[in-house]
Image (cartoon, rainbow, N blue to C red):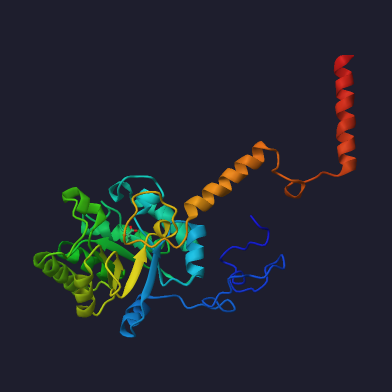
Length: 323
Ligand code: KIV
């Protein structure tokens, strides 16, 4: 860790052109100018649709990565339950619970100052009772999140109404809904038939009427995603649902090339971090084995006089033992 690194709470780190080591900050940041930034709100996400500006969302689950996402100027950070796979190594999202999600949210909320933070309500956290769902949604807000996301269509509409009535903004999520879709069938792509298209349109309209401020469309055909986006006044946030959604979201580990799970067609890899990290760790290991790390610049020294005193003491002790 470089000694010039500062905590995100410090308003100077993102903006300063020179860090404390005198190095020029290569990523000059237009989103944090002189310590000032505008927190993205739910209303601003709605406004973006009106002025035809695409919203860029990405998932994050920890402090360090969320800080980078925020500095890069994304509009929203989703603490997705995809954490179950990419952070915890489960095969699906059903395994993750409130406790783990709250830990991930804590890290993200301590990093993000500008982007809207949305917490994914995990499987089991909203099915039991409305009171319990509101309780859990409140826990996310108390952790610092600005909204929650709930998977499902018409069946979750009454619940969404209650959470919104409690003052908490809700993002919907239809199409492929990972928490339950895989329990019923393996049908990932939605909106291929008239029946599926009409159901998606109905779900989307009802979520809008219930007061959701946006809706994720996951693996919905381009045509149906376009129709939904044209027919709603709230923004659609697509993942695997084509270019005509009002915004996009991707799992950060997928877009960074970090997660080695299934390669999804709708993901574009903007980096190959698995290889980058693999090479770095391999090099580190080699340096340790070959005694090339640490070097003197990575080490600390004691005062020579102090060392002399220690050596003298050791000599005396050895002599006493041998007498
Ligand atoms: O959990 C998640 O990351 C998500 C997004 C993929 C939308 O729900």
